[in-house]
Amino acid sequence: MPGDLPILSLANAALWRQWLAREGATSKGVMLLIVVQNKASPITTLTYPEALDEALCQGWIDSGGRKNNETTRFCRFGPRLAKGMWSQRNVGFIERLEKAGRMLPAGQAAVEAAQADGRWAKAYTCSGDVEPHPNFLAALEENPAAKATWNTLNKGNRWFIYFRLLNLKTEVGREKSIERFIGMLARGEMPKPPEKGSKVKTKSASKRRPDETSSPEEGIREKQPGRKTRSGRTMP
Image 1 (cartoon, rainbow, N blue to C red):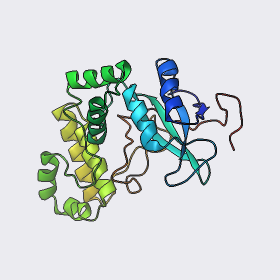
Image 2: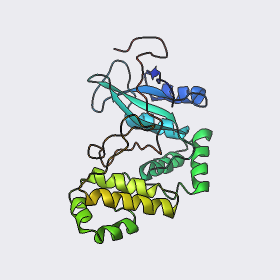
Image 3: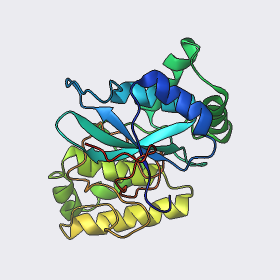
């Protein structure tokens, strides 16, 4: 997602839904101001769960963010990548939104595309209690040094390996990645996301919460926003 994303401040979820209906098809994304959980803000009542629901209804997705002040923060929202992976959590949210009759054409189209090409059935878990591909586990058993390091990894490290192997499209690519991860572990190295400056930025696997929803494949390209707003106001 090239360039800085504009900051968008809206008073409530209804206005966010209206904005997406009007601008969602052409916008590359925004840094949306939302209220911090269990806090009150004079600027907005829009919460993260409300913002995510409305985004999913219209084919958008969140991808990280940053703190603004003690009562609000910025959450990055943008159009879902055409071939982006889906999380099992968001699949569940979609099912809830469909039952409530809240899905709109753009959001339904994103769902149908994922169902048609198999991404829906391959939705990944956001839980840290996961096991990577069976071939990886088999290779781990054959390498005591790698297994010793594996046993020291936290849930975030293990989830990173799980996600990387899950997202590979060919067996050849998966086997190469398994070999690379086993080699790293055998040398006592911790798996980690791409270095700063790569096209997609992620948190260190050791710092990522196991239930964190953002992923490079499901989310949007990450850029730090400027301080401009849609209305031209300076944010407090």
